Each structure stands twice: as structure tokens, then as C-alpha cells.
Image 1 (cartoon, helix red, strand yellow):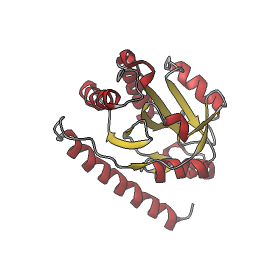
Image 2 (spheres, rainbow, N blue to C red):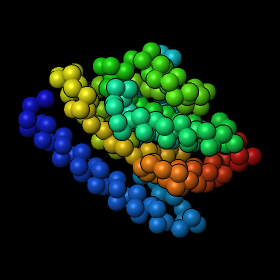
Image 3 (cartoon, one colour):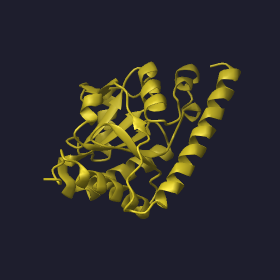
Image 4 (spheres, rainbow, N blue to C red):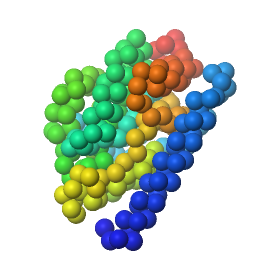
Length: 214
């Protein structure tokens, strides 16, 4: 990646983070009775799970999904985010399969399905509800940046073999049963998890296809 492209990527990353932080602040002040916003529809995509099985847009439909973005060699932010995802999965057990959790790698050069499976096992992931995804760099950039509106730069790893050069957004994304983005939120503590799970519960209870809506 040349210097011009790196500066452009850095600028886009700052822009994404700034916009999402503003969205999260506004969302945190939204009364619980107001309808949740719709930030966009996800386009068709095709990634691969930790079991080497295809994972497509259709897998996000019919359930509420909580999605985050990590890579397994990340030494600081990603372990924290993965621990928070584990806590979210545990704290939402009563919702059953109405809710699923998805962690998408931004380092496809390293994170093969086998690597992701070992990573999930380290965090005692319940693979019945929590899926880890990888794919080609091109497809991941399209899904993460264009689809989920999250900043990502995973190309530097292949060029420089430098984990510190990989950047990605830290927001968790809540997706409804129609594969529409409904919330962005950073999850760093118990209160953040409580707020995110409140959003998830609202979507579950209002979803005609959910187990809790019956």
C-alpha cells in the first residue's frame, strides 16, 4: 500500500470512527419507546465459517445478530472485544436461537477457518450461537466497509507482516431479522452490554419470526 493510499485509509478510519461515535451517543439518548433506526440493508455476500462452511446473507435472516470485527493475532483490543462478545452470548442465553453472534476476521492472511476455530475454543465459544467468519480480502473489505459501515485495513499485514498495521472499527453492530443494521455500539463494560442487550431484546420481541415473539 503506497503512502497516498495509507493516508486515505487513515482518513477514512478517523471519519468512520467519528461518525459511529456520534451515532452511538445519539442512540444512547434515544427513548426506549421510539422506533429503532434503520442504518441500511446488507448486500449479498459469501464468507466461510470456522467449520469451513459457507456463510451468506441468508444466514443473518430470521434471527437477530450481534456482529463484531476482530483478528486472532491482535494483542489488545480484540481479546477485550471477544471477552465482551462471550459475556453477551452468555447473558442472552434465555433468548435462545432467536439471537446469534458473529465475529468477522479482518486478517484473512492469518485467520483460516482452523485458526478461527481454535480461537473460538480458547474463549469457550458456543458454536451453536456464535460463528467466526473469514474470506478473501476483497470480499471482507466489501462486507465490512461497504456492508457494515465499519473501518478496516487488513492489507498491510500481507505487505509488512506487521499486526500493528491492521486497523478496524471497534463497534458491535446489531442486525435485525431482515438483515438490516439497527444499532452500532462499543461494548467495554457491563453497562454497555446491558444497553446492547436491551436493543436486542426489543428486536427479538418485535420480530414475528423470533422464538420470543410466539
